[in-house]
Image 1 (tube, rainbow, N blue to C red):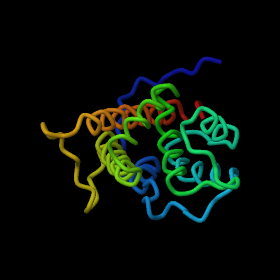
Image 2 (cartoon, rainbow, N blue to C red):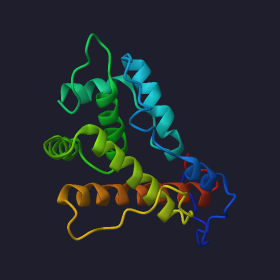
Image 3 (cartoon, helix red, strand yellow):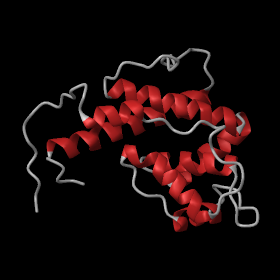
Image 4 (cartoon, rainbow, N blue to C red):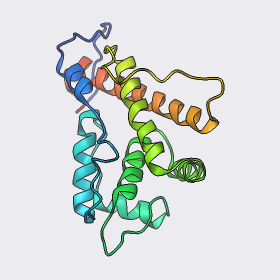
Length: 186
């Protein structure tokens, strides 16, 4: 069944549920990510729950197992995943919507050579929040000042920033089409 796209300009009202959802969306901080050891299904639920507002789809245990098999994430210790592994899995879940697994693997290698997981994850969180606010035309919240591009900025940061820009725009397009089509897409 073909979905007819309404010929209207997408304009988000400030109190639209999608705007409220994006406005309140935040990835968990690095410190909020459990470091007590979560089992596979718990990790899948944890990540899926945090990414649900973005419409990213569910993260499954088999997906996580495949990421481990491909070497994207360290193997669990006694079947349990810890903070750094979960932070990497959150990045993978967000990035896989626009990048191949091979490219994600390359990015993780670059990250491990240049920044510790906590620093890289913090940059991901801030960048994603800022880009979502920008593309959905939401006023920045206090403490989430935009991350300006600096000429002396490391190429790795510029690369991640551009990935996040693409992710934010993809989320915007998908949510806009969802609304324009009267929820017929999802």
